[in-house]
Length: 132
Image 1: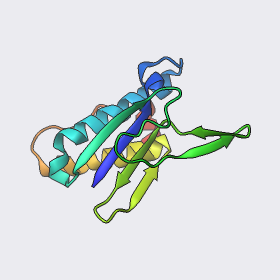
Image 2 (image 1 turned 60 degrees about the vertical axis):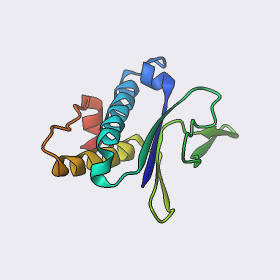
Image 3 (image 1 turned 120 degrees about the vertical axis):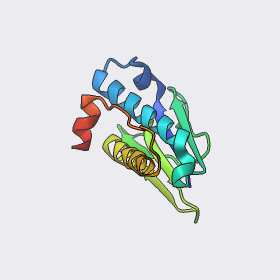
């Protein structure tokens, strides 16, 4: 299985002035980094973390699948999404932050079952609320 988390670099850095989105974005990246560290325990071949900037076509590094919406008659690429490709070539795309967090935290739970090390990622209150 291959995974790629794509996030907006400006959201991650807090440049948009939305502290809730920044917190959730940082939590997604922290979870993805933890999963990447222990990926072999749960059968993940690779996990990429891409930071998209304005003007990027979505920031894809490995899995070239894009989610788009139409706003004011213009196509807008989603800058935050989780893309997964399984061993059979099936691709799943999660464009909603709560779904991305759900998938990432479930992977961390699977890792926790396979190791004695503490793999917990401390989530912000904003992410915890999305998961509840």
